[in-house]
Image 1 (cartoon, rainbow, N blue to C red):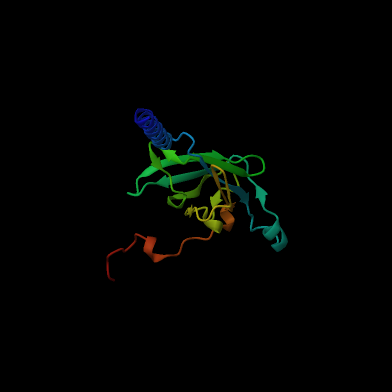
Image 2 (image 1 turned 90 degrees about the vertical axis):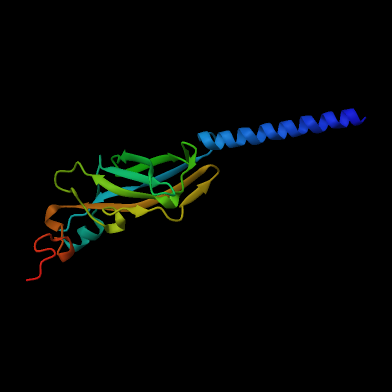
Length: 179
């Protein structure tokens, strides 16, 4: 009886050990780890129109490039991905939760505008953080192995609407000299 009991305990412990090892391997390789989806919309906002058109007349831009960059704990890039917008101006970037055995933390990722193919509406704005980049915050949806963040909308504008940067901090003329 003792022999049977000891055999059952050995088999149970080996099974448990095998399950634990396969769990760690799945997490390290990204298998079954799930995904993080980052989506949003890119629009053109033209200030040369009247007030009503400016406020509610945004047009989606097809072919804009939007990027997502994720960093690890040591501020090294572990993921860079990008997507182009469709006819509705929408983009979706899908990121595995585990990359090279490291867990991607959504709060260490940021999204920004990269380029616009529109010949007129191609100046990025910082409405909703598109120009400087926006960090991912609280997810919009969490379902099973998917975490979804919906951002934006991000905006491009025309060169006529772009406000010049008047900060003296960026002006290299006379920097460090006292006149």
